[in-house]
Length: 164
Image 1: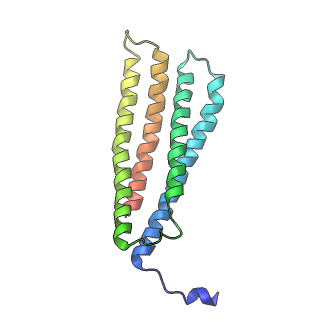
Image 2: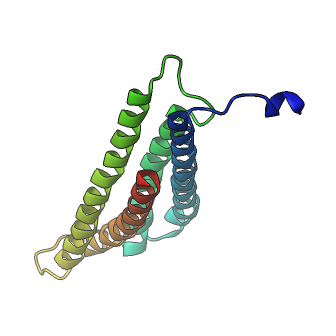
C-alpha cells in the first residue's frame, strides 16, 4: 500500500483521456445492453407473431437493429483503452481522439433525427390507399421511431458527457 502512495500522479492530459475512455466504454456498455434487450425480447416475440400483423415486422426490425447495435457496442468497447493509452500516445493524439469521438456522437445524433423522420414517413405511408403491406410499413415505422428515439437520447447524452 505504501508503494502506491509514492507513485507520481499522471499528467492531467492522461487523466482526462483515461476518464474519457472510461465514460466511453461504460456508454457503449449501455448500448450493448439495449441491443441485447432488443435481441432477447424481439427475438422471443418474433416467431410468436403472425406475419400479417405489424407486431411481427416491429420485432423483425428490432432484431436487425439489435444485431447492428451489438456489433457496434462490442467493437467500440474493444477499441477503448480505459486503463492506459497505447504506447507512444501523446497529449495531441489524446486531444484529437477525444474531439473526434465527440464529433462522431454529434453526427450520430443528427442521423437519429433522420431515423425519427423516416419512422414518421413510414407510418404516414400506411394511410395511403396505394400502400402495399401497410402492416409491414407500420411495424417498421414504429421500430425505427423507437430505435431512433433511444439512439438520439443515447448519442446526445454521450456527446455531452464526453464533451465536458
